[in-house]
Amino acid sequence: MSERVDEALAALAAAHGVATWYEDADQRRVEVDRTVVLEVLEQLEVDPGASARRKGLPDTVVVRQGARFRTGRAVVRAEDGTRYAVTDVLPPDLPLGWHVLEAEDREIPLAVTPARLPEVPRAWGWMLQLYALHSRESWGMGDFGDLASFARSAEGAGVILVNPVQAIVPTVPVNRSPYSPSSRRFANPLYIKVTATREFQQAPPDVRDRVLALAPGPLGDLIDYDAVWTAKRAALELLWPGQIRPLQPGLADFATFCALAEIHGGDWREWPLALRRPDSPEVTAARRELAPRIAFHAWLQELCEQQLTSARAAASAMSVGIVHDLPVGVDPGGADAWALQDVFASRVTVGAPPDAFSQQGQDWRLPPWRPDRLAAAGYQPFIEVLRSVLGHADGIRVDHVAGLWRLWWIPPGEPPSRGTYVHYDSEAMLGILALEAHRHNAVVVGEDLGTVQPHVTTTLHERGMLSSAVLYFQRDYRTEGHPFVPLQSWEPHSMASISTHDLPTAAGFLTAENVRVRVELGLVGDVPAEYARVAAERRDLIEFMVKEGVLDSPDASDEDIVVAMHALLTRARSALLLTSPPDALMEHRQPNLPGTVDEYPNWRIPLPVAVEELFSQASVRRVVHALGSGADPA
Image 1 (cartoon, one colour):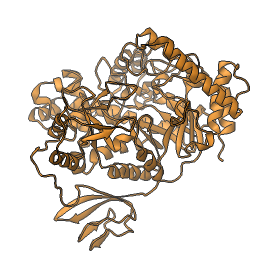
Image 2: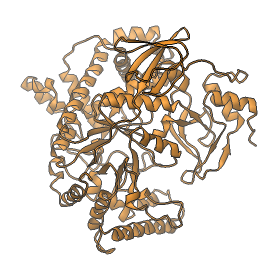
Image 3: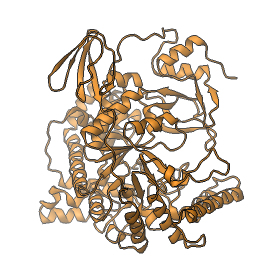
C-alpha cells in the first residue's frame, strides 16, 4: 500500500524540484509514493525536516536578452570588461554572453541568451550511423575519413545528421551503444582513420608496413568492435610521437581515467577504493606514474579533433552542414561519471515511467546530473558537453530533449515503476544551449518523440529550435482511426524523417521485418494481432500516399512505395527532410531493436555497399531525385 505525501513534504520536495505527482501518458494524475519522494530527496542530500523556503538569487542566473529580471542593487561585469550598474532590474541592452553579476555579496555567473535562434534554411539530407558506413580503406567499420568522403559525395544534400561519436571506455569488450558513452565531453577514437593521420603519412616505410599489417580482415556480416579497437590501438601505439605535454584539467582527467581503466577495468566503481576519486592522493601519484599512457590517450583526442574538423570542412558547401547527436547521458562506470561524480547523482539511474509500451517502466542505466550541483557549478559541465559537440559541428541534435526540463529518477534498489520526476531549470538549460549554439552559428534539433509535455515542443519552436517529426507517428491520435496528419499541418520548425535508428527501416516496415524478428526472439505475445496491426499501418500509409498523389497505385512495388515515402516528406512544411542509407538502399534490418542487448545485433549492422558505390545504386538515385526535386526552398 503506497503512502501519500503530506503537505509539508510536498512543499519541501517542490522546493528541490522533486515531483510528488505527475500525469501519465493518458493525462491521468499519478501520486508518487512517499517513500520514493524521501529516497530521491536523500540522493539530493536534503534533510526531510528542513525548511522548504529558498531565498535570494539562484547560483547561476540565465536570462533571455531583453527580459526583465529583478536583481536588486547589483553590478554586472560583462565579458568585454564593461560594467553596468543595476538598481533593481537588469538593463535590457546587456550583450549576449557569459558575464558576472555582483549581488548579495556574491559573484554569480550570469548568462544573457538569445531569445530566438535564426531560421533554419530548408534542406534535405542524410541520417548516418557512422559505424555502418565503410569504404575500401576502412578498418572494419566506418570512420571520420568515411564521413568526410560521404559529405563530399552527397550531391544536393544540405545536412548530415551523425549518430553520437562520443568517447568509449578504451577496454575490451567495447560498449557498442553510441547512446551510453564513457564521456560526452570527448570523442570516440574508434572512428580515427589511422592511415589519414600525419604520423602515418610521415612514418618510415617499415613502420607503415607494420601498421597496415594490423588492419582487420574483410568486413563480415556484422561489425566486430573489439577487433577494430584492438587493431587501431596497436597501430596508433606504433605511430604515437611520445610527447608528453601539459593538459587542460578536463582532458587530463579523461585521459587519466582511460589509463587507469586499462589497468583496473572499465568500471571505476570496481577499482581499488583509493582510485575512485580523481582528487585522491593515489590518483595524483598514478598521474605521474602513468604520464606516458595519459599523454597517449590525450593524443588520440587530438587526432579525433583533427579528423572531425576535416569532416566538417568537407561539408562546408552544404546549407546547414554536419549535425552531431548528443546522447541523454553517460555510462555510470565511465570517465565523466568518475571525473564529475560530485555533479552526478551517482546512485540514481534515469528512465521512463510505466506506459502502454512498457508497463513496468524503463531503466536506461544512466546517472543524472544533480540540478543543485549543476547550478552551483555555473552549469560548466553542461557547457563543456555542448562546446565539445559544437566545436566540430554545424548543429546539434539533443536526444530526449525533454530531459532539459525533467528526468525520471529511479532511486537505488527500486524498479523503474517506483521513481519520480526531478525538475531542472529549463530556462537555464535551454538558454545555455541557445547561447552556445548562437556562438557556434549552429542549428538545434530537439528529439521530442514519445510522451513529451506539449510545452517542451512549443518552447523549442519559440526559441528557434527544431522538433522532430517521424512519418510513422504523424497521425492524429485524438481522432478515431488515427488518420495521418495532413502534410500542410506538419510543424515547419521540425526535422522530418521516415524512421529513426530505433524503428523499422522503410523496407522493413513494408515487410513487417521488425515483427518477424521480435516473434523469433519471443518478444511478441499475440502474434496474429501484431501482424494484423502492422498490416493495417502499412495499408493506412499507402492509402494516404495515393490520396496525396505521390503513389499511383496501392499495388506498387516496395521500391516504388519507399520512393513515394520520400516524395511525401518533401510535401511537408518541415525545415529539414532526412533519409538514411538503409532506407535508400531498401535495407530491411534496423540499426537497433529496443528491448534487446545481445539477442539482436544492435549497432553492428554495416551497410551492404561501400561509400564508393553507395550513390550509384539505382534505389539511392531514385530517392535522391525524389528529395532533391521536391525539397527546394519554398
